[in-house]
Amino acid sequence: MGVEVAVHDLTKSFGKQIIWGDVTLTLPPGEVSVMLGPSGTGKSVFLKSLIGLLKPDKGSIMIRDVDIARCSEHKLYETRKLFGVLFQDGALFGSMNLYDNIAFPLREHTRKSEKEISNIVLEKLEMVGLSGTEKKLPGEISGGMRKRAGLARALVLDPEIILFDEPDSGLDPVRVAYLNQLIIDLNAQTDATFLIVTHDIGTARTVPDNLGMLFRRELVMFGPREVLLTSEEPVVKQFLNGRREGPIGMSEEKDSAQVAAELASLEGAAPPHPMAAPKGGIGGGVPPQIQPSPGLPERKAAGRRQQRVLDMLHTLPLAAQEAIRAVLDQEHQEELEAREASRGASAPSWDSAATQHVSSGQG
Image 1: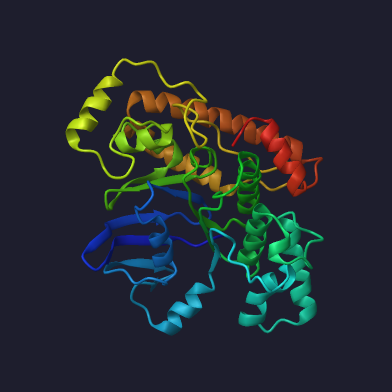
Image 2: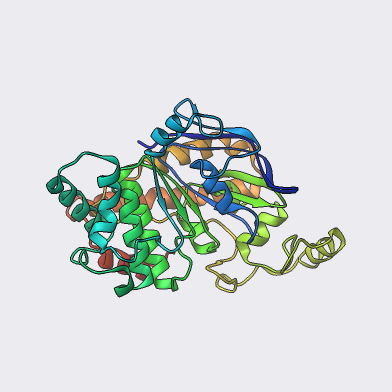
C-alpha cells in the first residue's frame, strides 16, 4: 500500500508574495486525492514542495519519519524514489523513443539487466494502453498518448506516491474520461497514494477519495469527497458548480460586497441544470465514484474512505447526511455488481475500459 504524506503548517512565498500559508493536511495512504483551486493559487507549487523541488519557508512534510522540508540531500534523494510524477505535458525526451523514455529511470536508479528493464517497460506500456508504440518518438504521437507515456514512466519504479500535475489539460472530454478510468484502474492495481492537481470539475466529482481546495493563500478545506461535495462553503460550492456567483472572480478575488450580493441573488433560486456548468460541472449532489473496470481488484481505498465518512457523518448538516447516505448506498451496490462482473471477466484494454466508462455516463 502507498504511504501517508503528512503536511503541517506549510508556508511558501516568493520574495514578499505569499503563495499559501499554514497548509495542514494528510494524504491517506493508498487513496486518490485531488487538489483544486483557481489558476494562480499555487497548486503546482504545492506539488513541487512535496517532492523537494521547492523549499517551504516553514512547516513540515513527513513521509516515513523523514521531513522532506528539512532533511539532508541524501535523505531527500532516497525518499524521492517513493515518488512517480506525471507532468502536465508528459515531459518526455524528444530525441528518445517511448521505450527509452520509460526505461530511463530504471537505467538511472537501478542495476537491472536490459532483459529485466524490457519486461518492466513493456508491462507499463500495456498498463496504460500503449502496447506496440515503444519505437515511436514523442513527436509522432498525440498529446493524450504522450500523457499516457509519461504516466508509464512515472510508474516504472513502482512508486508508492504518484503526483499528477493537471493530467487532463489539453485533452478533449472523451480522453479525459479515458484518463479518469485509467487512474482508478491503476489505483486498484497498485494501491499507491495519488495526488492530482486539476481544474476539471467532472474529474474532481467522480475520481478522488479526498478533495482539497486552495484559495486566497490558504487551504480552504480538505477531506473525504462526500464532505466537500455537500459543503456550503461559498468558494467550494462556487468552484464545484462552475458558477460565476461567489468569491472567485475572473482575474482576482471579488470584494465582499459583490460576493454578498451575488450569493443573496441565489437564495431561493432553482438549482442549476445538471449539465449547465462548464468543465464537467454536473450541478449539486454527490455523484457515485468511478469503479474499477471489470476484471480488476476491488479498490481498498474506497472502503477506507467510506468508513471515515460514516464515522464523521453525525457531525455534518442533515441535508449533507441524507445526500451522503444515498451515494454510499449506491456506491456499495455498484461495488457488488462490479465484483460479480469481475468473476468472469479479464482486465480490459485501455480502449474497451474507457468506452465502457463513457457509455455508462460517468466522468
